[in-house]
Each structure stands twice: as structure tokens, then as C-alpha cells.
Amino acid sequence: MKKPDLFRSILAVAACKAARGVLRLTGRGGTAAPGKAALFFARDILARTSEGMEIIVVTGTNGKTTTCRMLEHAMTKDGSPCLANKSGANLLSGVTAEISCNADWLGRPKTKRAVIECDEGALKQVVPLIHPKVIVVTNLFRDQLDRYGEITHTRDAIRTGIEKVPESILCLNADDSLVSSLAENVPNRVVWYGVNTPLGDQRDPEVSDAKYCIHCGTPYQYHYHTYAHLGDFYCPHCGYHRQAPEVALTKVEEMDATGTRAELSFGGRTHQVTVGLPAVYNLYNALAAAAAGTAFGLEEDGLLASLADVHSSFGRMETFRTGQALTQMILVKNPAGCNQALSYVTGIQQDKVLVLCLNDRTADGHDISWIWDADYEKLAGDPHVVQWYVFGDRAEDMQLRLKYAGADPAKIQLLHNEEEILKMAQASALPVFILPNYTSMLSLRKVFSEATGGSAFWK
Image (cartoon, rainbow, N blue to C red; front, top):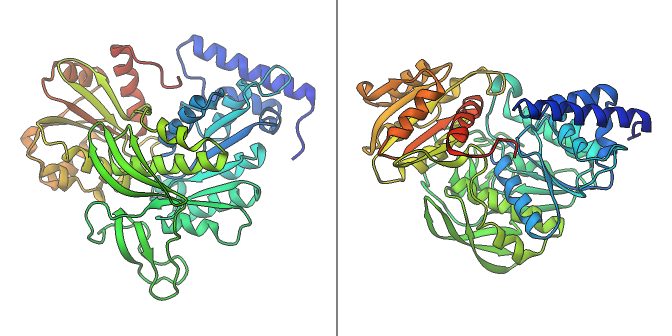
């Protein structure tokens, strides 16, 4: 792609840096607006400011931010500076802002390595400009139906992006039948990752985002499940099946609220690793990071050792010391991710307080019907939930959902603002678990971070 001329590049970079500087001085993130300013002067400024960089792009429905944080940590530990869009601003404007602010005044990148989180729908805009060395696809689940539509539309949008960069190495989740199909009819080298052992309940999931074969429509069969529609799938009619992963989890030795000890296989070699985050979905994030880091060329032992040092990224299993007990914030935004968060919370066998937050703003998706597919019945049946709170633009909808799930209505209290939630957490003698969707997480995190001395979300 033709790069912008030097004069327009200078104007675009200057506008980007100036906009971010002003916004940061006023306490705002400056994550997307600076990119929009740069794009005003040069629509393809990203091609110049990323030229010569080695970049890993991570896309998919769930796990993007955490996988990026793992990879960023591994690269930094490897001894080289690494750029990352930590704020999660992952559309074209957000990626442009992060990379262009990293450039000098002539548009030349100052940091040569980057890990970039990219929205599934924006991949086709971003990757032809930055030509990533590696593209990771984590998983595909129903998410923001009013924006993405059917899940196959999301898969097709990712495929369009992949087709524009045949030189990029693909790291694909072998356990996701939708993700696996992205390897078909493309020349890209593929590195597969997955779980080679059953995890959790082995019943067929009642709600599945990929129940039928993507090629012939026959219901999938499974040798084993991991969670949701992930697992060792195969089609008994046309033969479409899971690929054998090169990077695989072979055994879970111990999992608790602090993390997981597990056994990983790399090309036949076995490694004992610790992942510094709990829950099954974080094992997949660790596998994605390990596969991408290997494809990128990071040293294997250092890459695996770094997984133990990575803890929460903002709003994802993030813990705050608010008072007598800890408060943990776990982002939920679709049925599959929510069910995993609910399994984690119900697995903690101690009395606790739950705060469920629900907004329906543009960044969340206006369609909140997904809460009826999430297994809140499991949560309502947990005898250790002492008190329920609901909050957000659609708090009453969440309250109704909990009532139908079987929660005691007398124990459900509506909170009206973030400060009320903070005060409740500060006074609580029990651990508090907050399960917000995206925009409610951002506003809550700001209040909790300021009260506990945490960093801003873009840091």
C-alpha cells in the first residue's frame, strides 16, 4: 500500500501527539480521538508509522486483552521494549493512535516490537496497513449481535483480514470449530494450539454457538469438551475435525483462585508451567500467548516462565484492596465468557457478595438478551452468596433475570452509582465479586482505581 507523503505524515503524527497530550493532561485516556486526528490528515498514516515493526495482532471474541498482556510481558522480559494498546482501544482509530504516538515526528517507529489487540470487525482495515508477523485468533462466540450479526459474519470478517496478509503466521485455536475453519484455502503458515484433555462438565452444552458443522450442517460430535463449543470436535458426516495442536495443554495439576499449575507440550517436549491467573479460559489465553510467542521467535523457556508473572489486566480478574476483604472485578460480555466467570465464582467455597452490572451502550451492544442464555441458575444455587447487588442502565433487567434464576428477591438490592458500590465494598467483611460488562467496568474501575491507588486504564 502506498504510504502518505512526508508532509502529510508530519501533520498526522503532530495532530496525534498533540491530541493525546491534551487529553491526558485533562485526565482522559486519549485512546481513539488522537487516532482520528491523525487519520484526518493521512488516512493511511498507520502504514508509515508501523513500517519496519515486528507485530503480533490478537483478535477474537474473548481473551484478547489478557493474551496481549501475556505476550507484552514475555517480550519485555525477553529484553526488548514492546508497544501495546493496553487501553483496549482496538478499532482502526485506537490502533492508529497507539502506533502513531510511538513514532518520531517524521513518522518513523521508535519501538520495533508491538502486541496489538484488534477488534474482529476492524481486522480487515488494520492488518493490510501494519502487516503483522503473527495473527492470533482466540475464539468466536456470539457477542454484540446488533453490531456483528450472526457469528459466521464475524468469522467472515476475520477471514477477509487474513486474506489480505498471506505472509502472516496464523495462531489458531484448534478446539474452536469456527476458528479452525479460518485455515482453509489460505496460504498462511498455521500454528495450532489447544487442550488435549477433558475439562469441566462433559455434557453437551445446552447453548452452543457452533452446534452444527460449518460445512455440511450435521451436529458435531465430541471426544471431549473443555467449555462452551470448544473441545475435540468432529463431524460424523463430512469428516471435518479438530487439528492436532502443536502447542497443547496436556494436564491440569492444580487450579485455585490464584492461578493454575499445568503441563504443556511443545512439539513433543513437555514443560511444567504456572499460569498466574485462574479459570479455564485463562489457560486458553496462555496457550495462545505461548503459540504466538513461539511463532514470533521468542525463546521458549523464557516465554513459558513469564506466564507465571502475569496477573490481571484491567477489569479482567483485577483485584482491589478496598477494606477488610478484597474486591475482584471480572468482565463479562457474552454467554460463554459469563458462564466461565460464574463457574469460577461458584467454585470459591466461601461466603461472598456479588455485584452484577449491566449497561446497553454502543460499546456493549444494545441487545442484552444474552443474559437469558447465561447460566445464572448456577450462581443462584450457590449457598455462599450472602448478598446480591445490581447496577447499571439495565439493572432492573438483571434483577429480573436473577429472580427467574431462583435468587432470593429479598437479597437483591439495586445500587444507583459507582460510589455506592465502592462504599459497600469498603465496608464489606466478605470478598466482593463484581461482574460488569464493558462500559460499566470502565466507570467502576476508574472509581476503584482512584480509591486504591491503582493506575489509569491506559497504563
